[in-house]
Length: 269
Image (cartoon, rainbow, N blue to C red; front, top):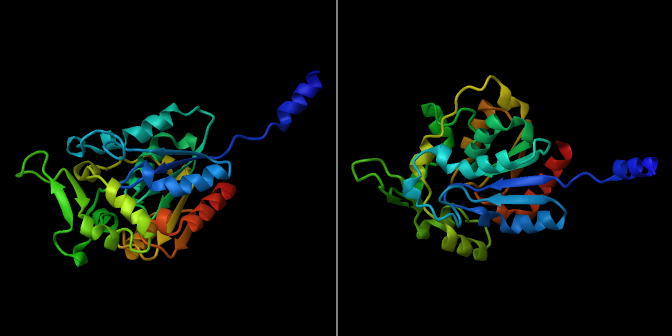
């Protein structure tokens, strides 16, 4: 009986790969709905989270003033995982900063970190060059593309912002299906812009480099320009780089291709 039990234990299949998907500023777990269906139908475990004030989280974005508070839902999820479990973190746009913070504190729980046309800065916004590489420059679309709020008073910097509806498809979803950009226009919320600007991470003595990183470029991204993506790749080279002919939202505009890359990454790492 003992030998039979050992054989059965030996043949037990490994647990499914667990992906944790992290949205960008103003988005939410809803961004990943198409990708989640594909991945779960293929047997993967998928967690889509809402960062503080995002998605269905009821917190007012103007009250979220520091990055640690904004990113707490991801850090809480990572802390709750068993010590023996490793996940593949996937971050979109500003969600890349969330991945970087998690990589510093939970290196043993992360199998790989995937930056999907995302802000990939080792120390966050510590220098003027970091800001140039990682902060969207939408000046070509005019000087009045955001609706901003001043939660600390009009004599203080803005606390939150969201793209005005008339610019959203042109800037974020120009290659995405119309039904998806329509859904996004109904669900996008102001993001805690001031909190994001406080994303600065202390030196971690190389611990972060133990996590394999992958960057997925979006050639036609109007938010994080291709030259910005490539500048961050040069500054902090990932293990692998892939390219998609898509807009800033490949979970809508290149769903199947993005899914295929994530499956490949899961098999590689």
